[in-house]
Image (tube, rainbow, N blue to C red; front, side):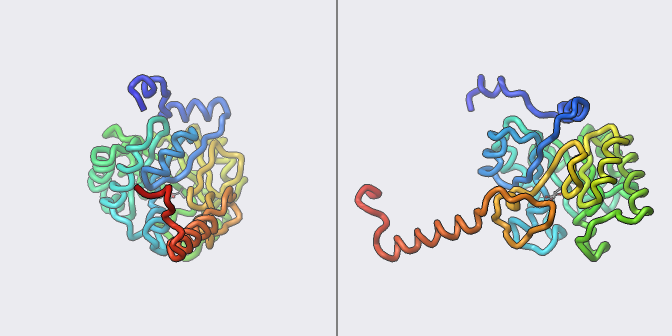
Length: 273
Ligand code: KIV
C-alpha cells in the first residue's frame, strides 16, 4: 500500500465503535492470528480484529486457552498488526499475565502495546479484575472487557454450557458490565449467555456490547475465523454460522497435489525452467 492510499483510509478507533453503537450500526469482529488472514479481513473491511487467546486451541492444538503465553500472543499480534491498515486490533491478555496483581497486568498490557503494536487489550472478568483494568486504562491503554462464558475460567465452570441462566449470575453479569463500562472499558464481549440478558446489558450499558452466542440484540458480533471458514469442523455450537467447508477443500487440494507428485504429473513442462 502506498503512502497516499494509506492516508485515505479512515482507521477504526474505539471512538468510531462508540459512534457506531450510537447510530445503531452493527460492529463486525473476527479473530486472526497471522499476517495472511489478517490482510484478507482488513481488505474485507472488518471493523475489529481480535488476536484471541483461542490461538491456543486453533493454532497450537491445546484443549483450552490456558497454555498460551504472553510471548506467543506477542508473536501472533505482531504478525497481524503488520497486515492491518484499517481495523482496530484488540489482543487478548493471556491467562496468567494479569490475574496476579495490577502491576503485573499493566506490564503485560504494555508489552502487547510496545512489542506487538496492539491497539487495545481484552481481559476476562468483572469486579475481580477491576483494579487491573483501571490501572491499565490510566496508562492510556484501551481495554475491552469479556464476560459470560470466559474460557480462561473453564476449569472453574467445569462445562461449556450457557452462562448466567440463573438470576444471581445474571445479576452479577449486569453489575460487572456496568462496572467495566463505568471504569472506562471501550467495549465488552458477552459470550454464550441468554439473548434476552445480552439485550438488556446492551440497553443499559453505554459502550458497545459485542456478542458471541448472545443473540442479535447487541451492538456487534464476533466469531472465530477458523470456525466460520469450516477449518475447525469438530466444533459446532448452535451460535456458529459456517460460510465455507475449507477443511474438506484443503484436504481435497492436498490429496490432488500428492497424487500429481506421485504420478510424476507435477511439475509439467510449463512449470519448470
Ligand atoms: O479468544 C477468542 O477467540 C475470544 C473470542 C471467542 C471472543 O475471546
